[in-house]
Each structure stands twice: as structure tokens, then as C-alpha cells.
Image 1 (spheres, rainbow, N blue to C red):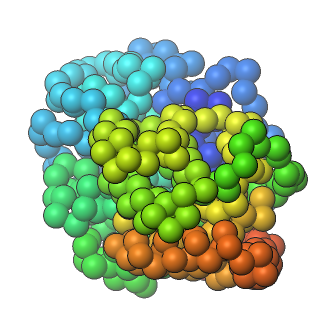
Image 2: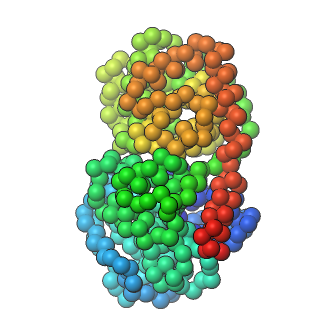
Image 3: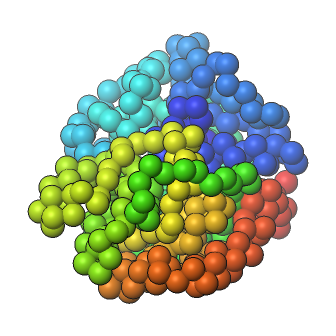
Length: 411
């Protein structure tokens, strides 16, 4: 398995998904997970976790760059950071030398990300050349080049697990380096595993790849013990959790808040997360005169996030393009009614949740007002959603993957 982030060093949901999925799969398979950075003291049962930060690249024998790939990839200057808006630059350093260079692993998504992807690919391919394994399983675009390199050098089948796409992050018009890497990678792979039918449709529509090359594997979730917390204010709470980027629709949440507060000023809206939209959202909330009812927490750890879930009355996810949306499952586990965008993968498995098109803020606001006012309706939504939770687990996801390996005769 090839991952870009892994607990306890994570930036978002990708690292958590890689951890939970590999842990579940380790019950029925032997897994080596190679990531740019890992903590030496961090262990996952039955998973051989290799962090490149703990390896001397100079001790590895480099292979020819992009050996046997049926195409060439050229890096160009581009802002490709999927999480923040730091300026990217492209150096090309360390791609054609006779040795394998380390890279800056303290900031996986900043600086020369293209260079880091290339160097991760070279180091990982050299590592894998000395290993015995059956399947290459790559997670998202950052590891696709490494997966392709390993397939070219070993002939092993390549599976690409698609958690997110460039067309989700930057819009359908985006046709830059990351899009091209995704397209070439998915064409070169033997099997794709999108995390939802929504993502599979985007792959087919925007990348021209047929559904018969895909196996849908919805994300799972770990069971939690919900609790009810105490809040220090009387108003009811509507919660948003996610990166403050275009993909997550945070400005829609602000519009929804404004409409709800026009009808019911005794509501607080809490936005947990950080990203490049934070400053503009702060400015807009002040301009719309709802600043005293609109709170932005920044990034929160799991303990503080669970406390927020425990005191929330409604969870709202207005994503513009959401491959899955694990935070909605976490909210449902805390018996918080969910109002979620139809443009999400989680809408396929949380059938009891209330759904709206991301642009229809009036409908979302109406749902929220109804949930806050009508306790019977609120309980019904919670109960209907709760019935779906038993079918959302990492063990189920892991078994689907193993079954797909077998069907394709990879194992």
C-alpha cells in the first residue's frame, strides 16, 4: 500500500482512511504501508509501516526514471496544493540524478509538491523492488506515480483507491498536472476503487474511463461511544466540519446560516476546520451581521471535535463535490440529524439523512429550521439515519477489497 499521510501525522481524512482501512485489511492479509513520514513509535497491528523519513535513500539502488511507462510526465509550475493556498514552486530537483534524494517531509502539501511526488515515487519503487508482494494498492494522486513505477518494474497488478479527484478540488475545468497524472494513472491501473458511485461517475464523465474498470468501495467508520455534552449557552447549535476550501462549500454554510438566523436568531453556527477560505468567511460573516452567531474554531483534534458533536443539534454538509464525507457518519453516530449535499458519496449510504443540492440553500435552511423546531421530526431523522450505521464499517470495506482482488485473480 502506498499512502501520503498516516496517523499520528495527518492533514485530513485521507490519513485516517488509510489507517483504518489497512488496520481492517490486516486481519485477512499481510500489508506493508509506505508513507513519506511516520513516527517510529507508532504501530498498527499486523501492518508493516515504513516511513521514508526513517530510511536512508542513499542506501537504495535507484532505477531508471519512469522505466517502461507508456507515456512521459513533465512537471510545470502550478498551484496544486489540495488543502491550503500556499504558493507552489517547481524545481525538478532530484529526478534524474544517480542517487535518491530525500525531500522535505515536514510539509507534505507545501512547496515543490510535484518534486516530492517524484522523489517519493523513486524511493518507493526502489524499496518495493526488494519486496515480495501480490498487489500494489495506491491511495490518491500523490502516490499514483509511485504505483505506476512499481508496476512497470515488477509487473504486479496496480489498484488505485480514489478518495478525491482534481475535478472535486478545483472544478471540472481543471486540466493541469494533477489532472493529467490522475488520468494517466487511472488508465494505467488494473483496477480502480472509487469511494462512491458519485466519484465513479466523475471518473467516467471527466476522465473517460469506463465503469467496468471500477469497483465501488464506500468508506467505513469505526464505532464510537456517543455521549451528550453540556454547553455553556442556551442557543441551539448547527455544526460544519471540514477544510475551508471550494470543494466543501463553506460559503454555502454561511448563506444557510444567514437564512436560518433571519427566521430564528436563537441559533449558533459553528465551523470547525481551516483552509484558504477562512479569511473571506470571517469578512463575509461580519458583513452579513451574523458574526455574533457564527463561530470559526480552526482545526480541532478528535477529542474537541467529539465534544462539539455531543452538543450539536444539526450537522450540515453543503459540499460542492464530496467523494464521500466521513464527518457526516461521525455526526450520525452521535445521534445528530444530518442535512447533507446530494453531491456527496455519503448520501448513498446515509439514506435517512436530509439531502439537498448544494446550490439550494433555501431548502437546506428549511430543513434545519424544521429540525430545530420539531422534536418528533428530529428524532425520526436520527432513527432513520441510525439504521444505516451497521452497514458502514471498515471491516465491510476491507472484505470488498479482498473480494475484488480475488475476482480479478490478483491473489
